[in-house]
Amino acid sequence: MADLYRVHGMTCQGCARSVVQAVQRAVPSVGVTVDLAAKTIAVEGSATADVIRQAVEAAGFEFLGAA
Image 1 (tube, one colour):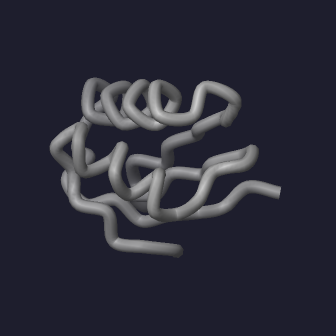
Image 2 (cartoon, helix red, strand yellow):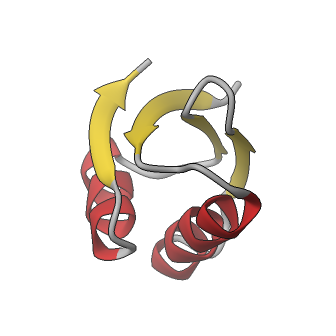
Image 3 (cartoon, helix red, strand yellow):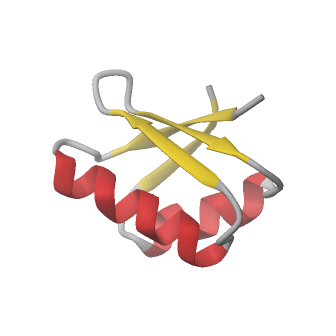
């Protein structure tokens, strides 16, 4: 089951790609799916919310926590 997080600032496919790449660089074993309309990411695999937050913020987006 995937963990769902809200991310502010994703407005296009390029933004989504940046977030996915940042999270996968931080935790290569996870799967990441973006829902641009809902401004959320679903992360499958073992990763803490803090690691996800750091990756999202390093990519230039605002991490708003669990959805």
